[in-house]
Image (cartoon, rainbow, N blue to C red; front, side, top):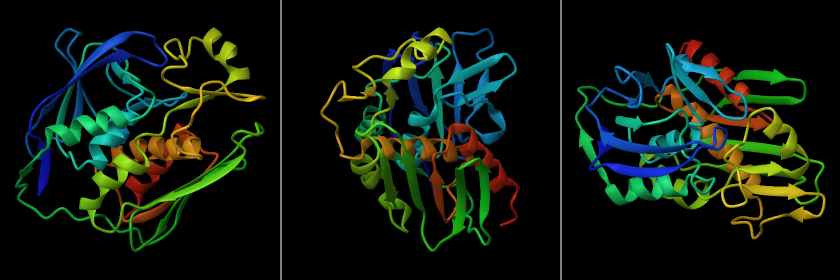
Length: 282
């Protein structure tokens, strides 16, 4: 069985990098249609599929594009749809970037849980692809890999010079049954907010990035600690990295039955791994 939304979801907010306010309307979609964006503000309302092949930029977020149309910072919304078992969804957006909301996926996931799902017979059994050999992607000391496993699991490690963050590791498994994804994601991963480093903010803004970032939608850390505590988890930064990883790998359509392990990775490395997984013969 596949699933789509039982109703529609509406959210409005500012994009992290563009600073532009956009409205998102998520609608039910037919079985087999997948998750896809529709730029309703552009001529001919172009459709952008939420697939690995559509990724065209990975600088501090993941951007999808088709032709001249694109949509940026899709990872939090897509992570919510995938883990909350929404296989098919039409995501209408009237601007270039998905709203950051409070910096986490909590509002997206809560809205999906509130609306509920509808089962859709797909004509074929949906089985998680099983990984049989390790797949690695590495850049300097950063890496991400997918390892054969009896269950779906995501493990992440980060390491920052700032004492308030330091070295953090977190491992999250929603369980071997896919029905466990939603509840586990809502409580363990979705509330984790994006974070930034105080000494990098000015340079990023001068580069045309994080125009919509603020202390209301991102945690900011400096030499003296967090500028806007309290944290929702003691290890909120590394949990947010798992959120990003899950969102990027959702572009595969279905998570493989594998243990995905990442260290100091990036959206670029996440997407490289997703492409390698697609190329792998299950």
